[in-house]
Image: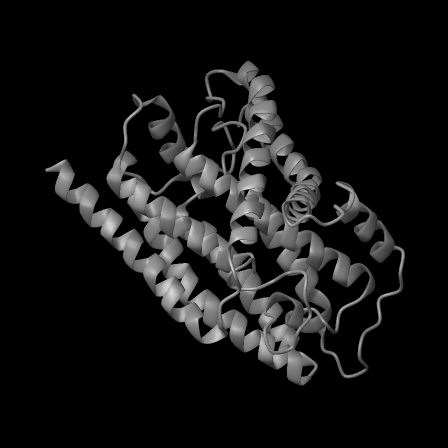
Length: 315
């Protein structure tokens, strides 16, 4: 393990933890401006986290250890997911574990824990949200795997660092299969982060909410960790999209000084991606919950078609 690799790994973790709430604030600000509303402060997520950490955490008397430990498990899974995605450099000590299947497994582990914790208290909203969350995950995880596999066909490896290195050093070319995978990934990212048209993160309507129903019984530091984990998940999916479809600007293992340019490039790409996400949410309308399986099934089919198209064109 080289010193440069250790520093780049620690820098990626720190950047993810610090920038994730800022990305959420940027998306919320852009969305409000596009809807002709008064935009909240860019630092509003930080203010919210500070307020929640200073409040007392209220827990039901019959809550089990699972309910208390779920926020920490989900936050840890999201931090680990962000740490294995090459956002600044491909020289990462965790690169051998940065596999596509392992990444999807981290998202699945966090989902299982928070869903079980929502049902632990026994409230109707928690059980409702847990069932909807598992439904979305059951359909979104295979689609995400197919997207990652479509990108791995180009690099002949499921390692995220290998995929980024291969795509970043190839001559610019349009891959039809990767374009279809990009559309599928956008649909999966919207569903996994509870964004419009799957869910509306700004409402608490019991008949439509997904993510908010899971965390209604949390407060204080537990709720702060869950909100922070949600921002980290959005940050992780944004970095996955940038790594797969816009890998330029990521430093190589042989060029540690390039990380000085990789950080402003990452911020620039995240700013553009956040604006496009807000624009997409503004132009879309929330769909009925019964249409979500059709939406995610379409994403899965697009990813599979992308794999088949790449295989046919490669012959």
